[in-house]
Image (cartoon, rainbow, N blue to C red; front, side):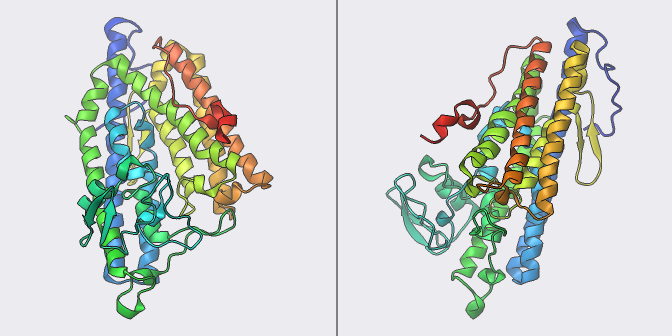
Length: 421
């Protein structure tokens, strides 16, 4: 791992052809892999801290221990969101990611819900199983013994059961639901407000099954830690993800740009932001139980910029940096590099403004409300910035003489009428 590596534009590129360019690309890919490893390792460290807070909540349920567990969850999201840029271009990440960050979820699979919750539907007949309340249930015609709630039960029997994406039983958002509960405020103020007594013992227990709820929370948190241990190892020296992305310099650089463009455009600008704005639907916000969506969006944006600039600030303040994609593009086209860096700064500034306004009192779900002109403008400005950023990423692909890359799309951006069909 490279720490505080001096960045001097063009210094890694002794030439722009032959071995000089190949060596430059290889160095950029090493930085990329180092940042991936550091980001996932930070996510693992933060998840272990979350596990300690969850253990404390279970051991001594109180308003204070619930609040501490929530704070640990929020802190754990900061490094993880910065790793989402490693999706789309790295198959190992793509095959794994759904275990830890799938959303949205049908809450009734896991625990009790409000009477307004629709429950089982033709699209998801398992949406009201309520594992916390039921030690035995039938899933896809098979009798499931959930007397003991374990990581294996969640991962192997429940998560994405019947290949239904809304059956999210593991990862950050399952834990988020168990800490906050449903956000029943729609586009009004307020997040989920699960009482700490949902983890209390004996007669103090509210909403029943407190011990099983605690067991589910513990199992989900333990599973998150083990999943992050696995992905961190894939990016370490000798890891499969590092080996795959560094094996072919051109393919590796294309993977970097694929992750940047696909996260910027189809995933964040489209599915996570524009879609919710079009529908005025708080169910489309990423961290919907905790009202933390403003931070998730912001740190996604930071992650894209990290990869381009070859620089990541770890949760302990150390800096991982090295030869960057920005330098590589600048050697081919200084104008393209300058334009992309400026576009990244503008999109991060727009996301930062959403974060600022949310922290001042207008949460992201309130911004989505029909008739909220200020909130809608904030979201649209960030969407516009991310789309413009993607156009500059496409220019970088061309400047590096790579094959054109088909970034992830979204009907909300590419075919808006289809959203309402």
